[in-house]
Length: 124
Ligand code: 5GP
Image 1 (cartoon, rainbow, N blue to C red):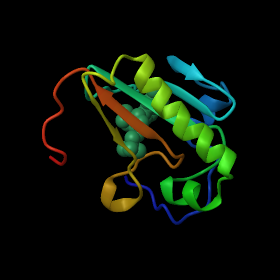
Image 2: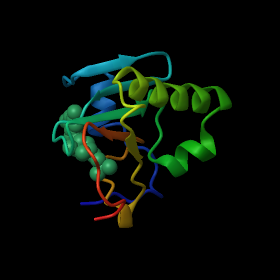
Image 3: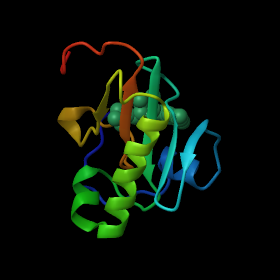
């Protein structure tokens, strides 16, 4: 079920639990502002999720409430993860689903990084 991106943050969501170390994930990168880990159900040869450490429901929530330092740290982390995965030269795609029409399932902001093959049309 897609989430309602207008609701307040629910800290029982699965990515909050990953951040607290309550459930495992395959970590790719971590710093003060962000955690990156492999998607459990990859849609491409490389499919990594990058999440901010702060409690933000969606891109909308993050872009409205996060500090300039959190936003800069998160954006830099997304770029660094893709770069360190060797994706700059072959190319990659970023995706941040937000709310019902996008099909967002987890109510903690996450940016998908897809790569490792030609990714086809932008929308299915
Ligand atoms: P959304 O549809 O919200 O943009 O994407 C949620 C993503 O989270 C999906 O690609 C799904 O496979 C992934 N996911 C859901 N639960 C888990 C989990 O427990 N661990 C990991 N690593 N990924 C998850």
